[in-house]
Length: 282
Picture 1 (cartoon, rainbow, N blue to C red):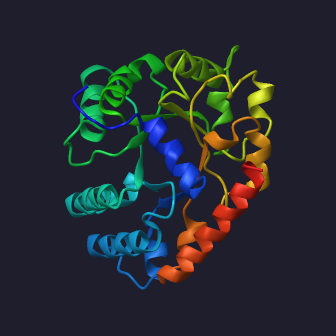
Picture 2 (cartoon, helix red, strand yellow):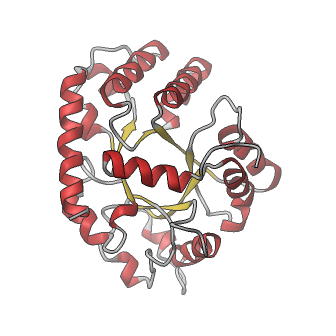
């Protein structure tokens, strides 16, 4: 290996042991910027990111920027994302870039190079990917991540209301097939593999109903849906029984709406983190 970076899963598990399972989502939509007294511009984005970093860098397991809110500002917005990723690296806080890329062949390889290659301006510690062109099409991203000590989170069971029509369809279901592919990819990895899954905290009993064994998949889980989407720490504990120290819980509005003061953001994050730890780890 050309890098000296430990595997992503090991780094994330260490960060979660140190800081708890909370991941702060950076979703700088216009309303949130306005509530911080910031303009809906690339400069507003940069100032917002600086404020979030001041509050949580070094205090949470990971930070998850949503690429779309940066891309909407064009080149200057992407530059703000590039700076945020660099600042997270400098702070020693893991980044999970929410880009949900999925394509085939040379295009997927180019996405992998953009987000997972050493030295890439937009390189993150992990990214989200979408498997609906077939999980096999993700191979360039999975291979690049494995070669550089990075991770991917594959969409498996998401919490949006439109998801079941696609993800629950078929026998076995699409979601079960996706998780089976992840399971094969992670087979034999210790303590867990580097191919994670995105499973909404609001999916309830869907995994059991669809015959999906998330524990056997031997991967980390990114579990959005806590806070604004209505899921609680208790819901996370119930949905992910047996996976408790492998679940990373991203929350954005529920924490950042406490801003712009770093003390308020920090206090809100600490309170939510404590609640997650008490529900998941005891």
